[in-house]
Image (cartoon, rainbow, N blue to C red; front, side, top):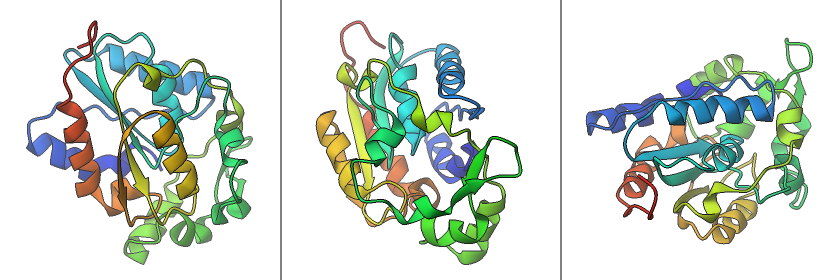
Length: 222
């Protein structure tokens, strides 16, 4: 999914007066995604919360380093790597998720996606099937390198973090999510959701982002 998967969450935030920017990562490489997100963060003034879903958690983990306007990090069923870890390396420490067998080459050479017929049951099994099928065909293909690149120093070591665990996740093992949340010392909530909680549980995602926005600033940060 691309940044449009956040639309319901964005609408809730905007209704409460929050300034929101949803980054469209190119998914061409991990470094490209980190750089684009870092540029987006730098374009914002005032205290800022960065939220990442799925692979996007690895992106915000790296993009947040050195950003003085970063107030907090929010991980939504997301990867939060330590230095030297990759998304794939973390996944390999847990039983293979159902979706793994259905990641296939996409229409774009060198890019993968979830085989569309398997997207509804594996990625977002808790929404209307017609909507899930539509989301399946607007997936944004991603290069395998994004999952294999190793993380730099993690922003969560110095930035207050929140984590929303998806208990019914078929993409990232929920035990992996709990481990990463505990390791980063995140304020953690758990919900009975598929991997795509911004789509299926936007209210819960909205609420944890609001909570993260209310944390007291860390010295030297916004």
